[in-house]
Length: 313
Image (cartoon, rainbow, N blue to C red; front, top):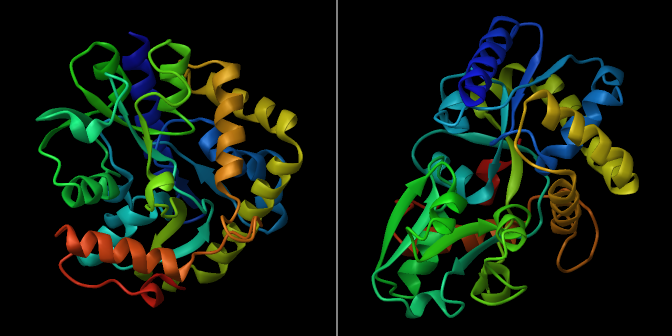
């Protein structure tokens, strides 16, 4: 019953946001309310958006609703997406603009049930997310000549815990900690971090369709400035930020706990540090765009080259 009510609540929220879209800037993170999106909650609650003179609605997608479709169909103004997902959308004919890059590193990993090398499991069943975001995982599987079966799920963790799959795709700030809390993995056993094997590609950023950006460029830039300020404040005030995150978690009745959200916040903030400079620069790196593009071209996910310049405002 709670899940049904939650879905109805989100549906009404998205509907209300759509009705006020002309007066507000509607932003949709790619998943439920959690510390992964702390900077936007901070910018809202601390009044950073208001100080920029803009009204922002933060709405979250339904389990069966992809943010990709929401931005393509112009139901929202901006969304958060991993870089590889944005490249695939652009390659498929949906031009996007990167407003703000909030992640400088990859959080992705494979976790195997047997505690060993996932690529040594023949015909492995591997879960990935129903919403997508598995482009780099498929690139790596192709390069490693991994004969595996992909199983889509709204929650990759549940199938893994149930023993229905051999390997799960996971994020270092989310599923990894859930499985550690469940006692199913150690700190390193069976964990294949993409960033440790030459596949460190930037992840989350804020994107708009290029057509929408041409109509709301000033508002979009104000949103980006305030959002960056929110993330910088979050990094400087993690305890107060966690309080704000937990307000959103409770508001949307997300089944989680404060310990998990603290770990998620700490890891999300760590991922924002540039691997070379150590700075929190919020910039899209040309070298990572080009690397992701090559990987996706080699795997056949992209049919044409997507250039770095195509993502710039």
